[in-house]
Length: 181
Length: 386
Image (cartoon, rainbow over all chains, first blue to last red; front, side, top):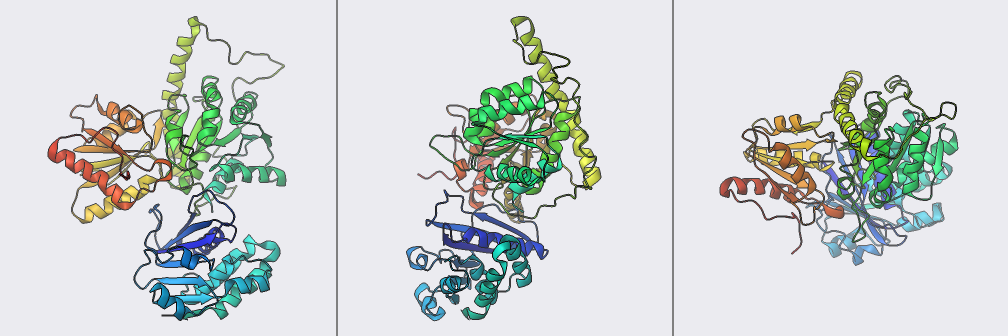
C-alpha cells in the first residue's frame, strides 16, 4: 500500500488533488481511498488531505502518520509546518518551490525530492494560484503511481470548462519538475 | 466515488418522490447532490427546503402519509432537533428512510464523528442498521426502502454511517445500472393513505385505554421486521452477490478475545485481528450491524465460544456502565448459559483517531481480564490524553 499526505491551504485544492489521484487509481483498476483532514475548512488555513492506493480492499481508516509520499502545495508551508514528519525512509517529497531539489534535500534531510515551480505555472496557465493538478504532474514525473492518462480524464471530468488549460498546466509540470534521489 | 454521492444515487435509484432535509455537516453532500438532481430534472421529486430538522421530519411524515416515497438525512444536532418527530414517524408507521451521517452531539461543539447521535435515538422504534463502508452505505440505503415499505413492516428505517470517515471518503463503490436493480424495490402502495376522499385519522391522542396496546403493537412490528430484513438481505445476495448479516463476524470460531464494534471501525478491527493472529493470539472481531430490532440469538451464537468479549463504544453513557453498546451487549448475553464476560472501553470520540495501537489496547484489555479476572475501570477511554 502507498500512502500519500498532502499539505496545502484551504482553497488551493489539496483535497481535490487527493481525490483526483484516488479516482484515477480506481479507474486504473486499483483500490484507493481519499479523504480530507476533517477540520473546519477555511480558505487560507493549513490543511491536510490523504490518499491511499493498494491492490486490495483498503480497510485501514486511520489518518496517515508515516507516509510514503508527501506533497506540499504551498511554498510557505515547507518550513512553517513539519511537512516531512513521519516520512518513510526513502520516502518522496514533492514541493511547490522555485528552489532546486538539492536545496530542500539538504535542508529537510530527505533523499528523494521533486521540485516544481507550481505557482508560476498556475499563474501563467490558469491565472490563479491553484496548484492541485500541477502538483500531480510533478508527482507522476517522480513516481508513476497511476497512468497519467487516467489523471487527465479525471481532470477533464472535474474541470469541464477549463479542462484544456488544466491539462496543459499538468503536462508542463511533468516536463518542468526536477527530481533527485 | 464519494460515499455521500453514492447514497444520493441510491435515493435517486429508489425513485423517491420527496426529499425533505435540512443541511448539516457532515451530511451536506448527500442533500446537495439530491437538490442538484431535482434541479437538473434527473430526479422527478419534490425537494422540500425546510427551515429546521424538526420540520424536515414533520414534512417527511406528512409526505409519506398520502403514499409518497420519502428520503431524509441528518447528523448530530439535526437529529437532536428533530427528536420529537422521530418518535412519531415510527408510531405513525410511515416508512421514511433516513441516512444518518454519525457525528458527535454537542457539547463541546463538535462536527466530528462518533456514535453519540445514534445512541440518543435507541428507543425511537425505527429499524436501525449500520454500514461499515461506502458500498454498504449505498446497498443498505437501497434495501432500507424495501424493508420499511413492506406491508409486514411499515416502519421508518435509519442507516448509520460514520461522518467524514465515510461521508467524505472517496473509495471504489459499485453503482448499479438503473436496469440492474429494476424490480428490487417494488412500488410503494400503503394500505392506509391520507386522502381527502376517504378521510381517516392519523396520529390521534393515545388515551390510557389504547396507548399501552399501541406500544405493544409497535414493538411487535419492529420485532417482526426481522423476518423481512432477512428476506431482503437474502434476495440482495441472490441478485447481487453481496451478503449482509445482522451480526458480522471475523475469525471468531476459535477466538478467545473478541472485539465487538459498530460502523467503519469494524474494518480496521479486522486488520488488528490479522496482526495479532500473526503473533499467535487467538482473537476475532464482531460487528453488531443490526441495532434495532436487536438480534439477540445471532449475537449469542456469534459470541458463544469467546472467553471474553471486549466492546468498543463510540459514545459515553455519563454516570453509567461504559458506553451504551457495552450495556446492551452485556445484558443481551446475560440470559445465556455460560455467557462470556463482557467488558468494554470507549474510543474515537468526536473524530479522535483510533490508531492501530488503540485496537491492540482493546485486545490487551481482554487478555488482562483473562489473567486477572479484574474488570477495567468504569468508563475506560482508550487514547485518552493524561
